[in-house]
Image 1 (cartoon, rainbow, N blue to C red):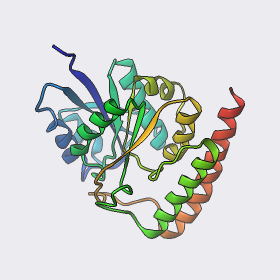
Image 2: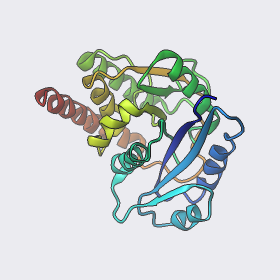
Image 3: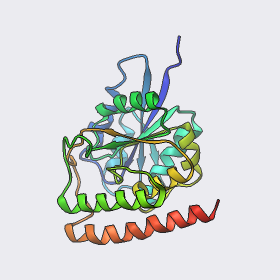
Image 4: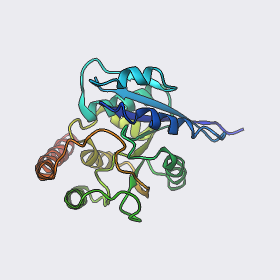
Length: 241
């Protein structure tokens, strides 16, 4: 009998009381076969609403942070939890319902088939589902070009927060993970560490609750700040070799 894989579904959550129950329930609904066992690992990043109380009542593995770490710190907490507890794979999805858990088995299958260390769920390969705003798509394409220039990796959806890691990748991100703008910066990290990266088309939704912190004007400022962060990460990793 083949080993049943343990998959940690890492869900960083900050003020996600409107959607977190549905997301966890959808993760648990994946446990219908013998090939893999999925565990919802919810990282409560000091939410100010009732997110913490809600996840304590759900069928999940709740992790309550004592201080607000932001998205990068919350996600790295989940990566470390998965690595330290001997999960075979871990996948990050958002707590606002944008990333359908039903796409996870497809990502796992393709990742194993291709021998990737990191699989990134992309909404832009087949252009199905929610495609984000025009301004954000411009920024995402900018990061695609930037990462391609720096490390030679072409990822169409470089800001996607839906990404799966095997234990090789988990060992890397448990030691260091970008804190403020982790998605585009992490691509530089993966490439620098010689991890195999792939991209898989997925169908994403609009957020099911809460409000985005980035306005149209803020998206331009965000693009500028992330560009600097990506460059600093690249120089830091390059000089640490």
